[in-house]
Amino acid sequence: MTDIQTQLIEVSQLRVGMFIYLDIGWMAHPFPVNSFEIRSEAQIATIRSLGLDRVRYAPGKSTQETPSAEVIASNVVPIVPEPKAKPEKSRRELLAEQNASLMLCEKQFGQASQSFRDITELVHSQPQSAKEESVQLITGLLNEILGEDEATIRLLSENSGEKTSLHSVNVTLISLLLGKAMNLSKPDMLELGVGALLHDIGKLEIPDRVRWQDDAFTHAERQLYQSHVAQGVMLARKMTLSPMASLLIAQHHEHADGSGYPSGISEDKLSPLARIVALVNRYDNLCNPGNPSTAITPHEALSLLFAQNKSQFHVPTITAFIRMMGIYPPGSVVQLNDDRYAIVVSVNSTRPIKPKVIIYEHAIARDEALIVNLEVEKHLGIRRSLKPLQLPKAAYDYLSPRRRLCYFFERGGDTKPVPVSL
Image (cartoon, rainbow, N blue to C red; front, side, top):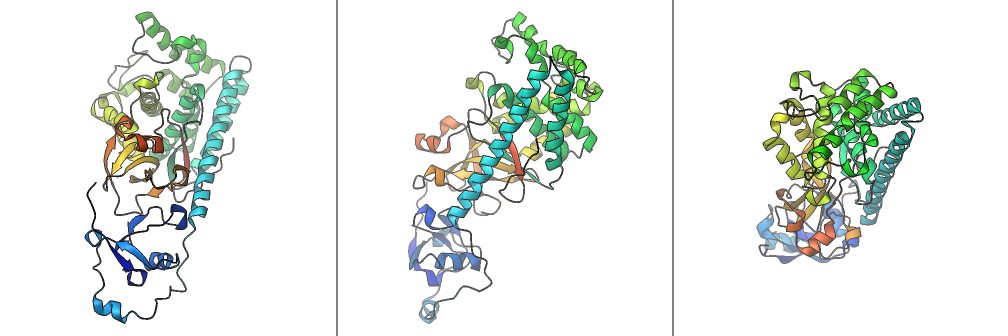
């Protein structure tokens, strides 16, 4: 990293536009990073309230010159913070909110996963109950997703979910958010959610050893794996799912260019809802394959879908998907424009270019790291995406890149997730 020339400056000399460094404990100030450009008088007031006499200042990174000697000499009376300046939340308060948000998202994801497992246990013995519980689960999610103007796609911890339900819940949540982004009607959103939740239900009818796609399958194993689509349609009939949800299950492996299965149909025969789930299903299978060693990063998955597999998907659908997920979807490991390493933890579906990240700071304990909103920290941006193994070991251990990606949603405007009725 390039050396930055700094000098000490009295806190009474601070001005908007100065780039400063706070050389104090991470818990001793409320800012998301230790170094930043001052953007407001309120930030200056907060810095002065920390009890510091001087801070480090980097003229080369500032848009405000060092105060002149005359200004310094005349600055005899300490500047009193404006009485109307809103006090910044303490770092402990921000961390508490951040952790509470993540815990609630993980709890909600766990509830959705458990509901899905309950549904799979009812499919054979009580198919109508399985259908009713599926509709109830999706209705609860829609009541919240459609009730918010914005939705943040949130990356959860490694321990969230488990293999048998993770994929179906991921595909359901992302499909619903994409359906919202594409302005689907509420009735179509319900059909989309039910079909997405049950798109792989046919895997209950095939042996465990072939439930996850593997490039090493023999021809017979590949045929057995692909039979889960027909098995899913049969179970959909048993549950008396609607024609739209059943068609989605039948077509979730079909491609716009006719290269999919089981029927090899082309785009004009694909239902609009199947176009969404086929794309999201493929994305999640790239990020969360049956064999974790073949997983690729979310950034790589989007690049692959757009650059190499674009002909397989409906162009308006894949365009809306990339716009919603951002160039760096949650779970992406990145390097910032100041050379620091970070992991993307959430993306606002309406403003995806500047995601929220956790930054590797060796001086800060991992469990004390604040989420940094790149939309607010204007001087910070993403330079490039990295593979997790490209990280230095210390950064890898700190950021803990996920081997399995679990997603849920939060409010777009703040850090608190929306309660979901399941």
